[in-house]
Amino acid sequence: MQGIGAGAQALSPAYSQRSLADQMAPYVKPGTPLYSLQDYPQSLPFYLGTTLTVVAYKGELEFGIGQEPAKWIPDLDAFASQWRSENEALAVMPPRPTTACSRRGSP
Image (cartoon, rainbow, N blue to C red; front, side, top):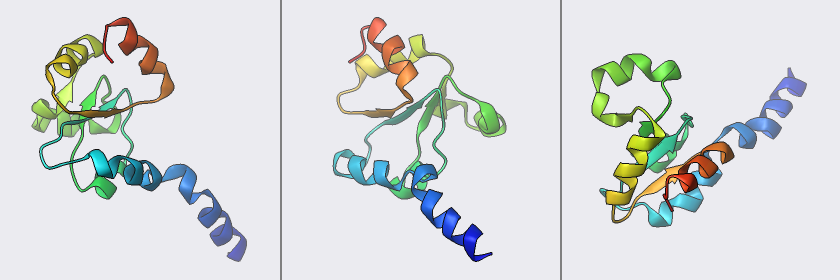
């Protein structure tokens, strides 16, 4: 049991978004739009104390998206349009969508 406990402690930073939240925190002000592209980092909203708009991903969030569809953007094209209309916003994503977004002219 001690080995399992020690292993879980050693791996917890790999599964936690606390480090990312700490890096984002200085840029997150009340009302700052936050997006998560093609993924949903489960612990990030907890550490940031706010919600994320999910883009091009449903997964385990499908029921919630049905309840609050305004917190979901179905694809990267719709996101690119939304992103260009924002003054200050933050997005998190795995490396793969970065290329797809830059092709759509999104910084």
